[in-house]
Amino acid sequence: MLLSETADNLSARLDRAEAQGLWLTPASHAEEVLLRRRLAAGELASPYRGMYGRRSAFEAASVRERAVRTIRTLGLLHPNWVFCGYSAAVILGLQVPNTALDFVHYCANGANRPESPLVRHRLQLAPQDIVLNMGVRVTSLRKTLVDCLCASSFQIGLAIADSAIHWELASRREIARWIEEDGKGRRGVRRARGTIAWADGRSENGGESIARAAMIELGFAAPQLQVEIFDPMEPGNPKRGDFGWRLEDGSWIIGELDGLGKYHKGGGDGACKGLDSTIRVLAAERRRESHLCLSGSKVVRFGMRDVLDTAYFERLLTAAGVPRRKDLPN
Image (cartoon, rainbow, N blue to C red; front, side, top):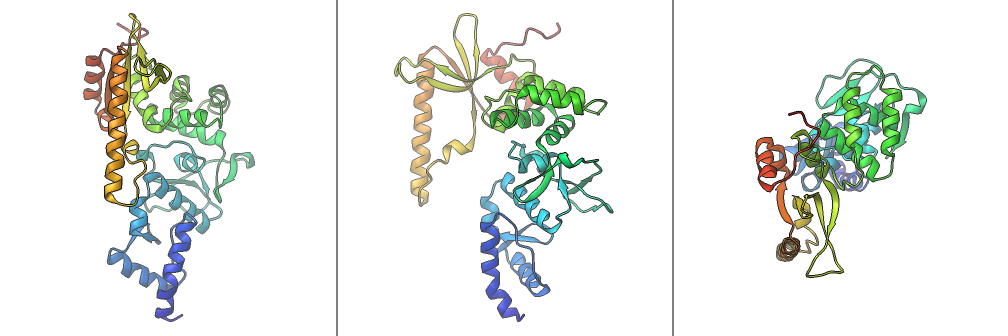
């Protein structure tokens, strides 16, 4: 194929790969030469060796979307691979924190592939341990949850377990039973048991789960989730908070996890429309918070950066008066 013909086809192939949720892999040496040239010119991005996408599409995609595309593209290139651990979890639709998506976890026979970001696992898989999802082979929900909860920190594991329950993929009782039946003698099974004991499907996203895990690890009382507070200004329209602690005097401390997503709703067709939308969302948030305060509730706001700064987060919740757990040793 002539180089000019390859260039003509490249845009169409990039469009098709993007529409299919995949990265483009070169079909010929000539196409690879063109892709590398465009990569060097800054037109394309390469999330993994031999995979390409338009830079605009790459930058617009979330970490989760990039990971899914990479796994699915690898699955087409290597149909015998079975993706496992966090890679299986994200394909199955579970909430996997971005920090756990830096590597691709898979099971396959043959020699180890040392290049990053691939991590090969030597797992004995029964036929019932393998399912097809999003066009790739992954470990089953049961095996994926047990593997992840045994290997994860409390914060990552709680995000994964909460999401499985939230989306009604499995109940907490089911997951606890799977851990007992499949986790016997496994390293990390005690951590998995501890994680599922705190799991709660009312958590609406992974950030809320991580924040709640941090609260528990710091010794604070586990909050109630998605609490509704009476609004004296709008009696028929109670206001909801991400986290809530009811104090002995009947008042509430409301914890609010701030995320950039809530300020990007309805972006419109241009910067002005996007800015107007953000201003409207911020104004609505301030109004809602003022109504919560009029109810006698104390509101404490924090972002993920605050949550991950353990010393600061502990000082913040302590200053707000969040109660400690009563089961802690003196």
